[in-house]
Length: 462
Image 1 (tube, rainbow, N blue to C red):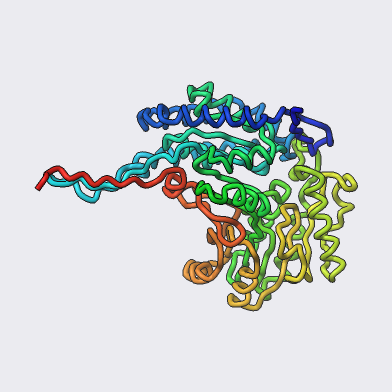
Image 2 (cartoon, rainbow, N blue to C red; image 1 turned 30 degrees about the vertical axis):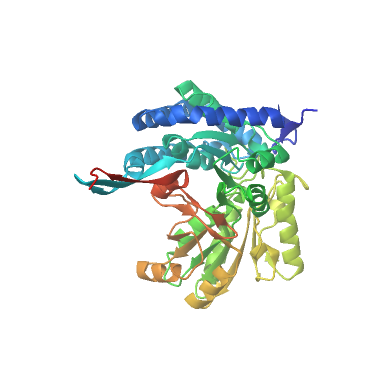
């Protein structure tokens, strides 16, 4: 019997979209079409592939009004924020601009006797398993370089953002990318794992939970399929004694609360030098109290519902446990219109927290942040590293050398100074520890979806 995949809207708790999942045989046929289409796609000139990818993104931009409305229904982001088009456009443009140099042969020798060089070859079929929290941005990180490099792509999007893959496929096909070169699919977990285990794909890029990443590794065990995994995070901010306090509050609290805290590199814990701690907390509370939680279609709403009520319950449980263990909640939930166990969750700031509490150690992925005082850089480094995750850290200081020295000791993928919650397409997006492995964007993003191939051509026989 065909299994239906349903997106339950956090706005009203109703089924917003549902699609039938492919059977295993249909999924195998889909993967076979992707593999058959890849050589001809790779044979097209690089400039042509670049132009088609850029045209696909341009077509997506034409759907902006529809996309923004659908995102609000699917995962609750307020429409006032206008979707993800700025980042999608910037990342696509940058990867297109560097494609020729990133994919150019590394020539060791080109003489009358030898040609020796290393080329970058497409891996073949790239499988993207995308998350719901930034569904267009996280997809484009791999989709653009994969197609540009000459791979075919199969996209499986999260249930919560079921329509995103359809919109991307619609846009790219309208721009001229062949249907078998970029396919959007709806799959169950068991069919997904069966395809990976059968070597249907040459590279799998997964963004999601640690448990999901472990399932991907198990499915790929023994196949030698390449994996790129961006998993959980518990990103810290550290406010040093010489920081611009107002700027730190504004950026770090936005990093903690934007998108209802559902950001891969959102700020989930903050450490403040003891000399600034009281002032930081006071300003942070005022910042959060100025938010408005409400229907994402209301132009005055700055905070929408979490994507699913079960995600909100995880955060509620973490907050309740922390309070029971001695933490102090500084925001009165009565100031915000919660829906009593549903997806609408009041933001929260916790103090008197410690690393024995789940809210300071496990990923929350919601509008809550714990704030702790520290006495110096050494203590800040120790608590920032006291985590199973390592995606980003945000350091606030007027001294770049100090930031670099502290950042060198933090176990993380990206070090920010005086900013947070941002992806620079010229820099590799990567993590360490349970955050995963691999990298996207930058020149290294092309290396993830290509393989090196060496040529040693001897032009003489003696």
